[in-house]
Length: 494
Image (cartoon, rainbow, N blue to C red; front, side, top):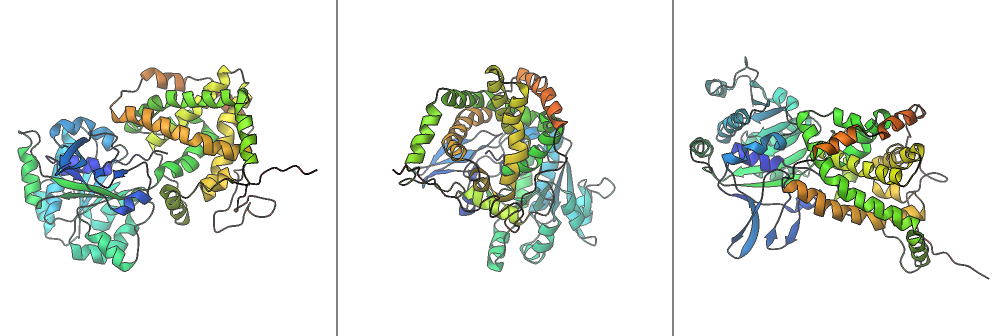
């Protein structure tokens, strides 16, 4: 499941546009998702980017990917900053004046409606200097530290190291769920490790570290207005990315589809979000359709049935293994344990991929002659009203392994096929800048399944399925959902 995290790359491009940006990472990145960043080998650093092109460079015999900065990248800023309405720059020391002004200028040149707001103490003498370069209370671009933090989608924390060490509990508590914390060095991470605490699991934490003092960051940016590519090198990293993909699918997206239909997901997005959705949908639909046809015809021909029978006969030697042991699912357990009742953000890219895959299933059943009631039940309703709530409650294994042997084996067999084809075809197409086919969205929005699903929704139960999380026994236990899963070989005795 794709996680679209571009915050680090987009920050470095507009706040300190570098000549060359070196990508660095900590081990903690890999516990978020193996799809967000991957290390191919000990000497080959790689990462995924959805907006800005990466470039392979050899340093002393070691290959690393970089992002090369420049004003020619501004055309990608609207997509990169999708979903961000306000950026709060906290502090006014060495880096804050440079990064705040660079962001403000870049956003203005790209024609975006994003506000950059400075957060300072009410009595701070730096307010005069901030006002002198256009950040004022009257304009709504200068405010009190914690008010700015609470209202910002992206918080760039540039106060002194000592202040960070003292104030970080209040700063993290003030941030909105799903917001991004931007740092310019790893000091705070070290402080928190020494204190034995972690960042909130419902926020993103990224780093963009300019390799120079604030005045040089600003001056080279200004020079870059006349000499494209003038800028300062910086490192960037993702320490922690909020797992919006799974939470968004099993929570917000499923609820919207269940009660309002698939077009409601698209219509709930702003214009930038709709563009992301359309791009993800157009890139994902055909690859997903390929696999859906393969699954259907494998079942129809009897091959899938034979495969299940053979697999069950091998359970005495090869029982089904666990499927929730990867870093992404481990982080999912942490996310569930810290939910505060608020809904996960509606991630437009994730929504586009998910709805495209769901529509591919719809189309296969339609072409194969199934009635609309069955198409809606098999392709949509079973997922959003039955399966996804169980995954939302306790994770993927809890959902999958409470199903039949056939479904459990099928998920293990076909999930890697979807994973591979989406990554190799859909996501690669998006990375290469493929423009969405406008007819794809037009066909989606006009598809007759939406009317059929609306009729089904009129017969929807008045209550949602209720399943307890890891701290609750609701719907779990003897005669209900299992938490321990087994697989036994079928034997016949005389």
